[in-house]
Length: 266
Image 1 (cartoon, one colour):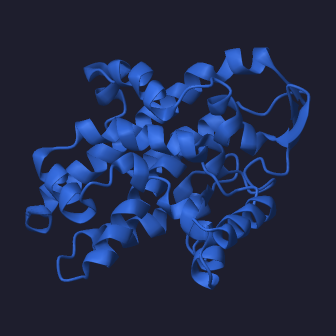
Image 2 (cartoon, one colour; image 1 turned 90 degrees about the vertical axis):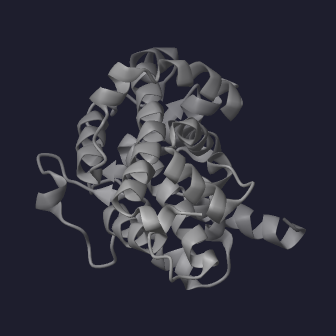
């Protein structure tokens, strides 16, 4: 990325606190966890479309494209990274807004992924977005309650530094471990056992949203000062959501290829 591109990305980071859902590290963890769990058919699909590009690399593409010029990536596609589910409602009751959300976008790009008549670049885009949006829907504050932009308007002090609750969950707790994404995967992958896969077997986005929204309501602290006690209270939930996202990326792609094997053939 050149100096102009880096400058544009820096400006976008400042302007858009909702930019990095899970942060780059978290998304890469979900993609890397998913890759070895792909079926043979899904592996053919991924390698046929992405070549040497890993799912870890593909997982952050949707956020990186938000610095691309034009209104599509900088405005039109922004609402597709999250859903809004007010407290006491489920997704069906809340519904999707006219501009769409992560659920409607996921359905749209699944159809494109499985359409062999489309150009390679269109199917590559679809795969990268699917990986990203599944990750987004497992970040609890991407199932926002409609009152504070998914915690972006809930200010906190994290180890004395001013930030917001959304950023704490997107990146601060993950990056605070000082692990690379591959180190995270080395820790989490052995915990993706048969029992975990059964518990988180659903490939229905509305089920993921229900889990995220239920957890979301437990994340808001009584005060605004967060430190080791907050991490201790929520670290297991954080790791579970990363693991569930990784497993479900694989399961979603596996199911797609099972439903349309001709679209996944080399």
